[in-house]
Structures are given as C-alpha cells and as structure tokens.
Amino acid sequence: MFKYLLVGCAISGLVGCAGESDTGSGTDDFTGSVQFDSFYSSLQDCPRTEVEPSFWHARCDGVGVWKILIQESGPHQDVAILNERDQFDLDVRTALAGVSGPTTYSPKAEWRVRRDRQEPSAVILPFSIGQRGFLAVAKVSREKSCVVKLVETNKDDANELARQAADLASDAACPEVPSVE
Image 1 (tube, rainbow, N blue to C red):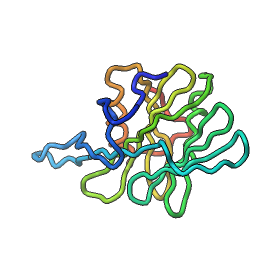
Image 2: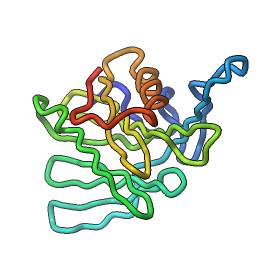
Image 3: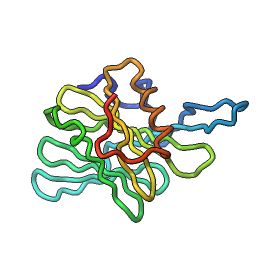
Image 4: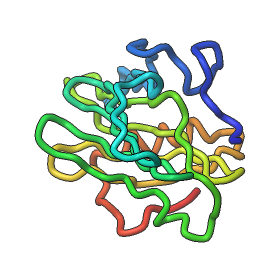
C-alpha cells in the first residue's frame, strides 16, 4: 500500500474528519497573495449501487455542490467529480500506463478552497496502483475538471507538493496526460 494511506481521523498530513477544515498554504497578509483552506471528505460508507456482480459505484459528498463518484470494476477503481449538472471522469490510469496492479482510492479526499470563494478550486485524491502510491491533484471547475498533476507518495514532501499544485490548479490548463512528480 502507499505511504500516506489515510485511515481514520488520527493520522497527520492529509487527514481530517469529514467536514473538518484545516488552514493551509496561507498567504502573507502583507503580500496580498491568495489563501487556501483544506476541507476533508470521506470516501467510505458512501451510498453504493451495485450495477452488476463485479461493478458498483458510490456517490460521496464533497464540498458544496461537488461530489466524488467512485466506480469499481473488477480490480480497478475509477473516480469522477461531479456537480448538479456535469460529471468529469478523472482517468489517472492513462497517465500511469506503465504501472500495473489494482487501483484503489484512499478513504479521504482533500478539497482546496480559496478563502475568497465559496467553491473548491481543486481536490487531492490519494490512491494506489499495485504497490505504488500517488496523490492525484484535480482542478475543480464547472467548465472543465481534470487531473493536472500526480505526485508519488514516496517523497517526504508529497503532501505539500500536492497542495502547491492544487493551489495553482484553477489557472492550469487540462493536460492531455498529467505530469508525474
């Protein structure tokens, strides 16, 4: 499994209880830079619908109108973010085509919300493929939401690198294949 597996509400780093917030990547009041806060949502115990014996999906609450849809088919889980109108599939396995093994998402998501706005600008989704762990940084936008960066969790500063990428995500273009750091 991966280094920053988020279990329960007791582990530091990306962890917080659902609905709990954490001030992060703050800005200096003297520079006028944008400030972000983190809000955490659970990806466990979400209402689940079985489509067929080896395929199910679960709709999990996020922040505001945003939700996370987890879909499992055999050994793989896929994830999408959605609002009341649109669904945006986040195909992380395309960027990691050379990495094999089952795909599993962590039980927590970290939403990055600009202090001057009411909606999240990014979400960080920890997941593993086989024995390798990653943090998927996804831009959250009503026009186009997508994965903008993948950070391997074997780095000591993986959480901070993911938060930095998340805080820049609203201005980022959606890449055909996200970079892996």
